[in-house]
Length: 243
Figure 1: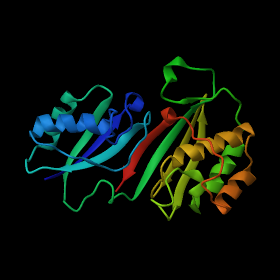
Figure 2: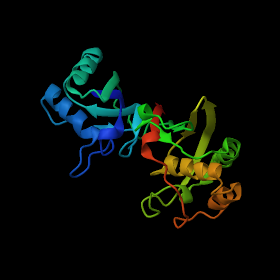
Figure 3: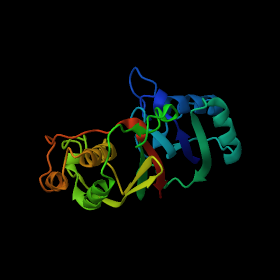
């Protein structure tokens, strides 16, 4: 049986989703729960890695087992063994042709920025910006990043590992409601730290530390040597995976 699971989590207490040496990852906690339920070692395959401190509203993973479990009961069983900062939202039985990573059509991330006074209740859940931002300039910058580009300047994945760093962004929107700025980015695929570096670049534009021409240059002359700002992970959310 192949099980597809949709999970949400608060990433503050973990070293990311994927298992790591000498650090607790969300994958470790979930696999420990599955071991107790299935009495066998279960290895889950995730749709997307998330870094330490990054949250998820709709992360997806799959795993296989010869044991058949009713999805609703399995969801309850997993949640009963998870800490309260990780929660399974849905369990489905899917065909073996489904793959949590390779079947993905697109992904949506959100980034939250508090543009108002420091809010203790947003600590760990939004980037708290102490500087005035030119939001209209940031929106212009987001338009430049929308479409198909070489994003070598906007990620930390090595060219040796990923020689082709061309990606296509179908949505890059910036909306302000009250003091909260919400940045939404959708693409068929992202490279390591790509969303955080793009957001960091837009924050620099909003603060006047970078210009729109700087973004154009980063796209037209892609380079790993480009000076860039990686926005705080706590404002980032993996919102939805589309299949």
